[in-house]
Image 1: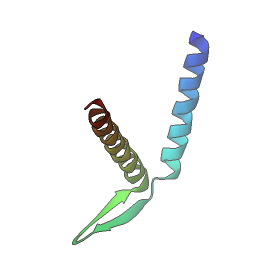
Image 2 (image 1 turned 45 degrees about the vertical axis):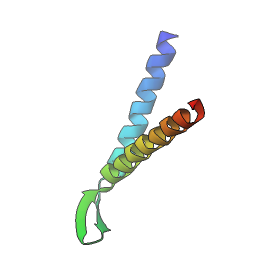
Image 3 (image 1 turned 120 degrees about the vertical axis):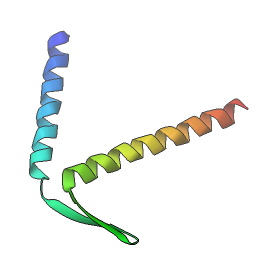
Image 4 (image 1 turned 90 degrees about the vertical axis):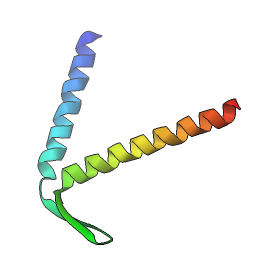
Length: 68
């Protein structure tokens, strides 16, 4: 089982590395009056992390409402 886990971890790491290499070009992001040039991979990962955090927050609020 240890070999399977290690193999899956290596495979996932290679997929993420390939994704990062293919999305290196900068993109322009604008919000209201601000504008920033950021690499596409950082934009995608940042959006993913913010989505995870907001989803976690919604689940925690729902748990508290259900407990009452």
